[in-house]
Image (tube, rainbow, N blue to C red; front, top):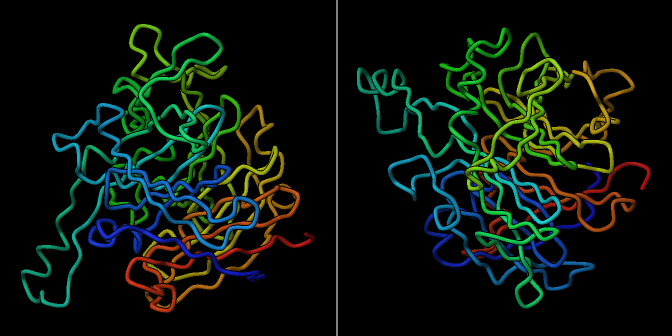
Length: 358
């Protein structure tokens, strides 16, 4: 790994109590700010750079509840949304939940029949099944979420993917993915962990399932319903389906994040099961120009970087371009950060790495 330096991410006390700072799952840079999400809340965090050109620290945290912007499907608006991907495109910030089921864990205090009972319990959470598009406006020089913005004279509202286009429902008849819907995400079941937006295309990277070593990326084209602008619908592709599938040869790994790089997509890849590594960054060349389902391999998909990982900790989960694209700098944030990253009570270190050839 070409580690150039680290950057301090400073959170407030509430985020420390909620363990947001130690469960980072998504990141995007946006001029002077950094958008961050953890996988155990229903919020998006904004941190401000000490230097927009060459940041060494992001602080001045602001927290934005998704429930203040859109109607979430869960009965409890603050139940975790398991946000696993963030994207910034045009006047919008996008966020996606994992859409996964989860299996209860056996903890140190559990044994015997109780431990086995927990391991047999599988549950879903409604707030995990979301794709959200949030308008962004400038407030005192900082990009800020709002419920509505006017774009080219047309009001655009904060919107969530309509239940009529619920991704889990749409995949029920899919020949590759349908049988994995009832399997928990960490057992190679359906688990969305990457999000990238390029023009009108939205790409969803799947940590699982991985089939015979092939990872999946779903491509969709959301639009605001003219009759109900607070809801997103999916525009069908030429074959009539509301999504397009791409499969990637990531050497048996699943997608942990996606990040646009011009017409390419950078792919953060890691194990789909409960393993520490390997963790790599790939470049999917010309991904955003593809007009058909893609089998990405060989020269279309190159391995760019090997990232370090710990034993039981330091799992790279989020990837973002830092600064001008031609400089090749990327920021990487981690779930379950190593103790060495937790420099103070509310501060965690993110890595800045540089792509080869830059």
